Length: 235
Ligand SMILES: C[S@@+](CC[C@H](N)C(=O)[O-])C[C@H]1O[C@@H](n2cnc3c(N)ncnc32)[C@H](O)[C@@H]1O
Image 1 (cartoon, rainbow, N blue to C red):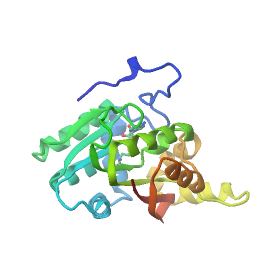
Image 2 (image 1 turned 60 degrees about the horizontal axis):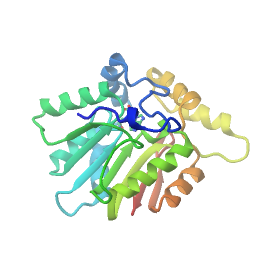
Image 3 (image 1 turned 60 degrees about the vertical axis):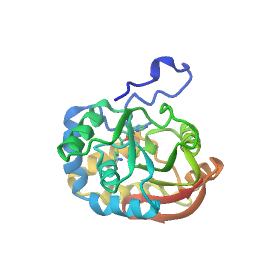
């Protein structure tokens, strides 16, 4: 597992290793993660639908950024793909790597790096995935992040991006946030409040602009539960 690249980077660059909002460098938080998420997410169904959207014709090179506990990385490895799974949290990566070992999966390359710091050759991946991670960066740095993902993909490569993206018109943002928070089970609403108040989820029209300006074609954008938007993009 590679160390963060932070030491060699310019002082003006966003420090993505520093946790924003929910602290995924906290061991107790990470240990609770699967259980907490499992209260409202069906990981198996999510991972299967991402693999279906990627539509890889055979074993491919798949990059996941913000892998967390690594459920998608394990599903992709089981489907025969060569997976690089990156995350800025060393604690998350330890947890993800141990889950992979427990399942006898030894081929996933876990990397301690993120959207801004992952070194990779241009065009070195057939597909890229990121779920619920990009909102940890402010919009300016999302633009840099998406450009990096674009560069990492081969021409025609697909990118599945799923994240909390807000949509409101006029001045109804209070109703929008209340409905976002209310859509979570009671036990996880505290996390949703932290998300709204301290993390960097953006608006749908900004996200679409960021994706297009990074070079992606948006094949489709589907609005799901709890403001989670599912983008399927192509280089
Ligand atoms: C809400 S979790 C999502 C984890 C997983 N993708 C999932 O869907 O369950 C967000 C993850 O993004 C990671 N993260 C935060 N900022 C990041 C960045 N700049 N680059 C990559 N990962 C980042 C966190 O450490 C955390 O593991």
